[in-house]
Length: 225
Length: 225
Image (cartoon, rainbow over the protein chains, first blue to last red):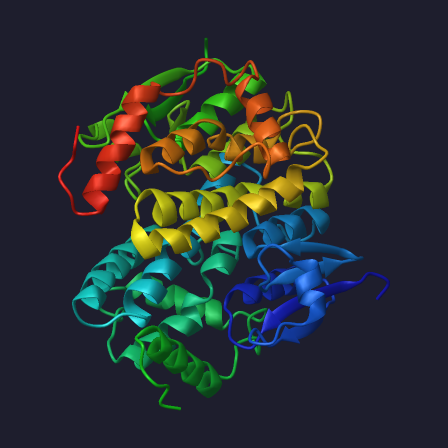
């Protein structure tokens, strides 16, 4: 491999996964550098001095930060297997749902459900369900958000296929079931079984333990594990 | 004008402004539809059913939502006067700072400073200053974030040149001064005097009154005006 392509990830963050999936889709070889976010390496701080977080894509000495920005960079740098359609309007649509993933769905599930309890969590659940219903409507009748093939919005939303269920377990409630969200459930299954996704998820027990710790700390309680 | 190009804005939201500036930079003619966000029009709800907010760009019957997504759409649809450089890495850099504008700078100033008081506001000020210092470092030695000409990051950050000072007045404190942020202050002045920006700002008193109302409501107090 003449090119240097490295992905800085952590054991539990969902955001580096979309970068890994995109590189796999494009058939780009890369190395993974696993960061401990409680003890960040000098390299991570050097490559992402503003945000100091993962993912970072290092390509021939240049560091690109912010997972959705990285996906656009990957799309422009390696043209094969496009992540985005040609048409500007359809492109905008894919970018809209990618943004919706992070700013609405992820935000409402993490900050409104996973890290809350009681009345605040009840409100968070309503917001999360509303966001998830938007996804259910958007994916209805389609195999992927990108149509017949995985696209940018699928990569951005892909974390749901693993993290949603574990988050539900950690808080002890079910947000998404087969009956109310049949299309979203089918998409999660389809996405999770895609070859590029295979073997990329974090260890399930380790992630669950981490989410419990984060939840307990956020609620001001001692960690149980 | 054969093409239908309409921008849905509100009187006070900063986000539609970047869309207006981008269209002006490209020399695209457009109409403005001004929305009352407390009494949204059926058209706005039809064109942005998921988020129900401005801006929306309506182009020949197609609605594009989310201001940064709209900027990318404008860039791809009208090629003249590019908002982004050719090079993928430089593109990623511009996109990074555009995202930083919304997720860090805007967020910390609105939610941490404008809508808070006391100890919470003190923490918000620290976060806002840290974000503003990142901008100061990035713009140092350059005329615009895009280099010699206004680019995507300038359009995304342009709200600062008007909203920062009014927000400071509303809360009665100064975040950015000439001495500590010389490059950022110079950039704000340069940006505000660009021809495409001229005449686009909201009415200053109306905006200040609106920010006071939002602040008081957020702090659970009666509105003073």
